[in-house]
Amino acid sequence: MNTEIKKTYDVVIVGTGVAGLFSALSISPEYSILMVSKDKIENSDSYLAQGGICTLKEPSDFDSFMEDTLRAGRYENREETVRVMIENSPMIMERLIKYGVLFDQKLDGTFEYTREGAHSTYRILHHKDVTGKEITNKLLNRVREQANITLCEYTRMVDLVIKDNTCSGVVFVRDKKVFQVHASRVILATGGIGGLFAHSTNFRHITGDSFALALRHHIALENINYIQIHPTTLYEENVNRKFLISESVRGEGAILLNKAGERFVDELLPRDVVSEAIRKQMKEDGRPYVMLSIKHMPKDEIIRRFPNIYRHCMEVGYDLSKEDIPVTPAQHYLMGGIMADTYGRTSVKGLFAVGETACNGVHGANRLASNSLLESLVFSERAGWIITEELNSGADGSCFAEAVEALREADNKSQASGDVKVGVAADMVNVAEIQLDQYADIEAWDAANRKLIMDEIKRRDSEFYDKWCNS
Image (cartoon, rainbow, N blue to C red; front, side, top):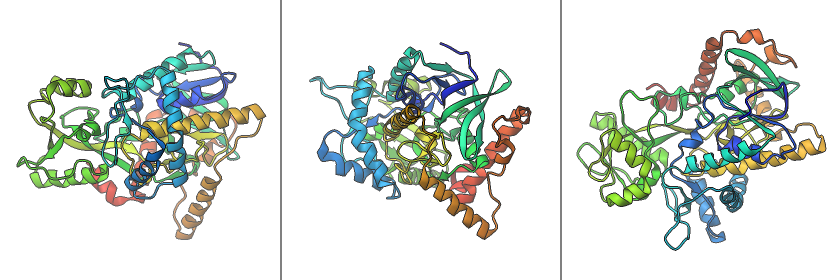
């Protein structure tokens, strides 16, 4: 693996999850690409995705797929974005299969679809209970074959180079050295904000770095307070990351029980509804968990369908086939993020956001189960297309006009109310060459970034903050 970093690339991609990887593979190989990971390359939340990936099985399911997505999102979704995602899903599956991704099949060779909460039918492809790992590994293998792509791990983004509303590079720190890399286009694929929460299914290093920089540079953010709490993570004390008990377990008939052993909620309701029901039940029961039971399922079927979950539960002392397991809600996914269009373009020219980092409106206020991998792939591919088109034509970087207009409206409101504008820190770095000594105290920089994000969440939704961010 090439780890030498040059001063200039055609494209810099920050993040090595499926969104970053797929965007790199969707850019013409004639252009040089630098991909960086803040941690080990494989340590992205994409790698942890268990349940599966949605797809349009047949044209007749389009309206149902659309309605399920909109209903789960409380009809706050951008319908055009949802349409693009659904229409492109069969092509994405074909490309994944071409790359060697193996989806589970029935004995007759047809795909084995499953169903999760808020889905009206079975439309989710999966690879056992490690779908994200399967897809990420196969994409990573392809990326490593590309001579035009440089992959570097343990390399952290600390700032963006922005001047005249145009992004022209990234500031990184690696081996305690701070340096700047120039690029014609920059793609942010840094995931969500789980590392800011005491209880999360995310890797701890995923701390919303892109959103802090958006606040510093006054890049349009949308619905940063729309944060999904997953209903069922394994209750374990003194663990850094909560182990996810996939929603597909409930999709296969697992039930939730209170302290008295009684079922208290429809397990296939949208995640926010189930999470809130569990939160209230835990308060009523006076304990930090409820129980999940899948004992109705034969042991060999549990092991076949959920080998990773079964193995982990056994390691910590629970046999899924014989006993109930304690589960508790935890932060899982961000529906909001950097405002982007269906090509990943943001309010800054030359700057793109994809995957969980982007808010293109597809999820609305609450993500439908197993739409995340699909969303990441569809729109990162489109980002790759438009970047290739712009670089081929020699055009200047474009931006998302609606995001720019949203910023203007936000500015007008904040000025009218007397609010202090965020983003003024951009003035310090709004030059072609950044003064790198301002990042000498990285810990202080990180602490300021964390506070920026959490304060913004609290400002936008104090009720959510008090419920889930203070524990």
